[in-house]
Image (cartoon, rainbow over all chains, first blue to last red):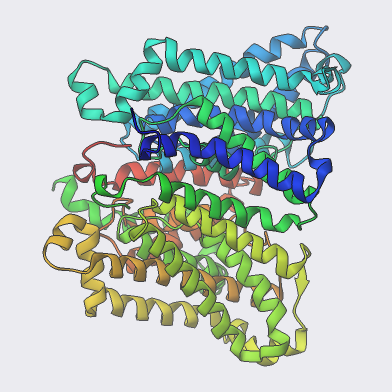
Length: 321
Length: 313
């Protein structure tokens, strides 16, 4: 009989158990946590965060890191609003064109990120951090510090139109999750991400064009950040240069807490889904049970540290910078 | 003359070129009084960059520096009244302790430094929000002047911040050049595995480097709050990017091992001149972040030692 309580199984199922335990805990303290209305609230909070986290999942699976999400989300959100306004301000008047354009812009920023990282041989955390600053700077520049908004009931249906109590954007996020899962498990690119993350030199030796895979990965991440930006605009009804703030810490915490190893090669988008839900449930549950919201940053910080410590196989690591 | 031999001299040549360009465009820029007040204004940033140098020198990074400074502005504002001058000790102790925590997590728990410091930064942010009640705080003006007035006055045209900066720079330079700690940090930065193999207690020195980084970020926050006579949980936002830029354009590469605190002094001056020249050439403050982001990419690309990175992740 195969052993069930192995280290591998424990690591694989721990995040899911934590999620269940958290739901039970918060429900026990305040039963109104377990209501459809509250779950819808959690889902709305989690939808844009899930898109960002999925984007960075591909990067972390490759063993790299992307810290540009705050800048890219702010920039694409602001550009989306401007473009929407320029195209008449409603989806019906031609504004729908803004959606594919912004997705392309997101992918293009990701490509620039990957290009800087790969061609200039700069470690990804620093290349992407710098590019994120550039993105936020560009968003500040475009808006001059103001808020950009447009009023289109059709677009806002993403938030207002509810099916089974959950708004449309939750289903959109679900579809994107399926798309990400498809890329991860059913395409060659998805397999290459794991090959590069599992051992770059081996991947290179077996004919994978590592540099191309890396650039494609960053581009894909940018694409998902742009989806996050559009959902965030739908959620808030506006965009400004701080639209993307907090996403960096939140998404990395989610991915790592969900069980995607920071060293690459392990985990995937389902882990990320669980991680995003853990973070969203904690943030929501702390409010529901009446804890002050200033604790959130510290709790996320502790969470990410614990998750990294637990997921690290210490025998396999020589030294850490 | 080959480029590799010229490379260590790039930072001060860049500084001279920049000063000359701005000086030609705007001769009043070169007035000693203007230069001194320019240097005085950048001191809090310099102190933060000085601390960051230690983290980067060993090949790590400290992304908590900005949150640390934020938290310290709040701590200083809250505890100035009951503690008086001792609040400085409290601030530095807090910075040193949290820096030690980052170092411990990085070395003993194998959490990469950019994650561990990001997480410690989250803790700092929570503490700052909690202590301040999410408001901007003010120091009592008379008490500030009695206790810390010496930090921000002027003697003639020389701002007092400059004395603090030079004092800290001297201490750090002493640590770097004349102590076992300094040599050990260089060894770790130059080749961590070799340093460990030759019997060095690598973990202890790395923890100390992060602790120094935290402590100096705290000093930066303290000076900043004294200058502004107050504190808030996000008041020092916007420090991290120029501080990292200062370290890197100074010539301490992300891979560590070369450069040092004197380089950071030059790097900070470069940042100061870039800022001043942007104002002069009519580049709005809103564009500065973009410019510094691009400068950062260029600086990393020029300084990084690629022979140390077998695979670039």
